Length: 272
Image (tube, one colour):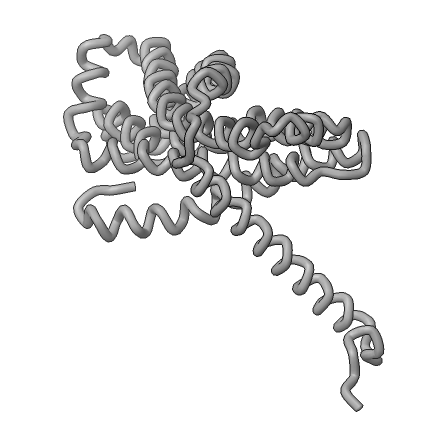
């Protein structure tokens, strides 16, 4: 007579297998939801008005956070870089090192994490609130495709906003590094700008910036999935908001490793 998981004499093993089963089921549901988003994205009508509104909510309203964070990150990177390069008498390479660090990895990753914190939590809470208050059911009763109208527009808004915010983060970081260098060494803006960009090529700049579109898709899909399927009243809304931030951050960190390897494969001499 075969033994079921529930009758297993080792409770910890039963709980582990049950957790694996639930995790695989959740991941399968997420993948199905991502496939539904891709399919709905190419179906008419295209909600350009709602998409533009979401781009403003996701991108434009994130500008102050991105700019301030970029200035802080650039200043800190400049100070740490100077303390390291001074040991080798290579202070002249500080702008170049700062530009490479920001453009290739720090800018895209920090932008993705900031978006996961601000945008992911907002989308998860917004859709979660609409789900538990039956607003999504009301839309569907009016023959409105809720996935097409609520989910697809938010996901594509994240995809569009992510590279734009990354560019802003990179330039804000360079500006913060320049301010730190002016205070310490009085370097000129022309010299700083020329040194920072003299060694950067398109293969160094474009792929790391474009990979944030994948970050945006992960953040948008994860947060809409958790919010769209929220349950349990106000507690469920809070849980969806928190999980949106945590799962989106974990997802983009893991995917970033794969994308870095993929970009190095495409551009052996440069890349992410």
